[in-house]
Image: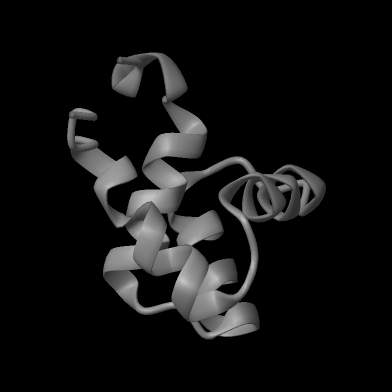
Length: 71
């Protein structure tokens, strides 16, 4: 049985289903934005892409700190 994702990755299935793009596509969007602060990236996802705060925060946290959430 596969282990359940922990931390921000636990949001990934619902992010992909709700917003219609893969997590890697969303990470490319964040990278291409040229923004670097957590607050700026969360606001980008919320205002430009209609994310709720929890989903925007989870994706941004994972994007900015990938090593922290490695299996």
